[in-house]
Image 1 (cartoon, one colour):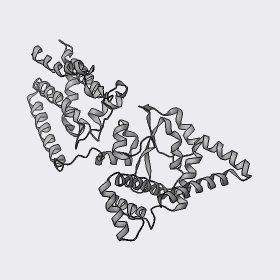
Image 2 (tube, rainbow, N blue to C red):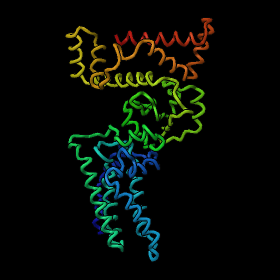
Image 3 (cartoon, helix red, strand yellow):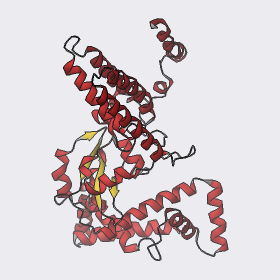
Image 4 (cartoon, one colour):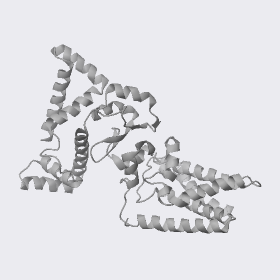
Length: 379
């Protein structure tokens, strides 16, 4: 058995001989132990968007109970075998956690969950057979079986073509609606499922009414919180207390940390962001973009209007008229962006002194000029 297990080393030896690396993914620079964190490993088992808890919800908790029971009741071997299983499983999870993309294409759970669930299920049965109380053991068996049938039926609505890797699960939306502090997944999971086009900008969860309950901000772009109505004083007060995971940190919005913008204004900003992103997707698809150009000619409207019209239709954003966001709204957003940037503010102070006007006037005039330039380029 030991000899046959060594066969798994052959691919690694092959790659090392030809490429100087034991793994082609590492050869491409997509692996690093810098990505490994407690949040990531914990999430592999308990993340409510892609963790094992979605695939083996009842079995997972019973397994943990049986594991602890065995370790504390095994006076002879002191649960050495169980501890070895735990160490090997967590060690393997850490190796898996070195990949940069932690939100792979999947419908239900993270694909590595399927690997580790096999270990859990086999060990679960092993521990169950050691359970001396036959009546209790039978109850656990039936509970496990029925829970797995229910879980399978619940997820059975997904087809073989359904790759909902970028769609949040209903349970995660509920938690972020009511108790956002309870859900802090690996940043890649949150970004991919709530703001996949955010880049290094601010990522957030927003309720249907426009209320933001949770923020994820990059270490290099804290000032961008100003775009969403957070003052410089607020940003400075929370910055020392942020806990960063791979340069990203979560902020739970509450009475102490709250946006000065109304839910309506935040919803407009969110819609604008989504539509801009969708327009970029359309522009990056030549056939799709050419169809939009033809549509603009047929309907006698500008290409920009046709793009926005199609983007709004795809995103089901119909509640705003006639433009998604007014020119003054755009200027207000730009003013918030300027005020959140200390270097920009210093420049505005110099301009205000040179032109002998107030600082607010200088900021407004600059924001207005930039927005007008942006709109001219679009048209």
